[in-house]
Image (cartoon, rainbow, N blue to C red; front, side):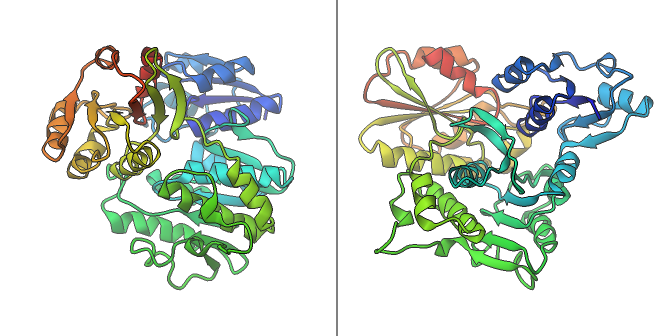
Length: 428
């Protein structure tokens, strides 16, 4: 096939496949609701992108349409493709097709997928194993979410939303952790576990599952499997040789991610020394506690993707670990009305390591407006458990104005999965 159309091309996974096709010399068109760094890079490679989704964007000579699971069934471009008889695949289905012929290392889990995927990718690249990689962010060294490798190895981030990862065919499956999320789709924890269980049960006797099998949310997933199970919490640790606990990564969650990556690399046969050296030079990924710069008065600014309370807790705990004496301001954009309501009580407890908490309007993404939840309600809930300054804001500009006097003793952490990253430009 030569001509492809992507509905929701700006999605981090969608854009990776689009980039892959562009690098192969294929013709790529697409649509999305707004411009982004990712989309700008695709346009530089030759993609033709529309910012008004409409049926006319799908041309008759299009050979395949790929769509994000975030769109609705009545999306005009999806409807048009079906009317024209053009084959359509969701992003997860396409990923399954691409990975079928490769030795696939799939990284799943509620938290830590992106960082762990990026760590594994870096270790394999540094070891000269030339993997193909699709990751849910931009890798720091390559400034890309896609790496075109020539070896058999395919490293991919595996998303559990709508059981998407069941399209994959992994040889090594990582489960970083399991937590309540995507409750707009899953009924409860048991339902989430059933999806992970179904994926793990597809692993054969020569395949590997890397996880923490004694974790309370994972134990039921790993019983009676035919694959080889490796406990990443027991990752190599010795006084005589390089010690994984001494890698230069802040945050307990990142140490766990590193242990998972270490375990995968050892299965493949990379030496301990090469793994530790690679992890020690790991710079992180885009929007994963990414250092953005300093304000005019010297306040330090970080940008982070945290949008689940467990992630908020981990990010702020790491910030406090790094800056024990500084004043920390958390700017948080809740993501989805449903997620915000589902985790409201948990969010109330999530900001204990911040001195100031600023809450922006909820980023609706794929959901319709829900008047029963708002940033003001979130702020009131957080304030009920917090001793510091907690406030909701309607505009990003007002937040920037409120922080205009922040100085060298201030650390500002921007968190959320929506468009909150644009606050960085206002601050800097």
